[in-house]
Length: 143
Image (tube, rainbow, N blue to C red; front, side, top):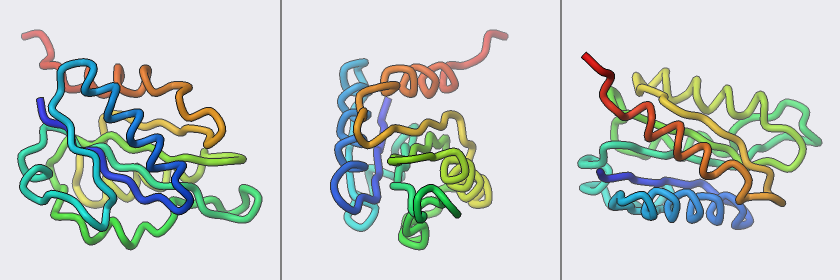
């Protein structure tokens, strides 16, 4: 399985989360590429079985929280019909931001199969569960 982990990071927290997610997929046998959304291997993305896309949460003290710089995600190759897992990093609250990122992916006609938020001070918490959810959603259902 090929997994492309893409991140939009401001101060490095989302990049560190992406690296942890990539390492977790790798530990489960996946071939993984981890890239900033502004500098990725287009061929790897096109051949990936799963795209993991993450960004940080923007908003003043959790008010009007939204996925940061979502316009940069528009530079990605088309993600229609791709299996996507999304994540956001946050300091105060990620509820609205995560929902908006998943909504963005669905508006691109992607199939969002997993979503998670990671507190920037506790980036390791929940990574295994996020990867478990994505892998379970990728497994073919019994006939």
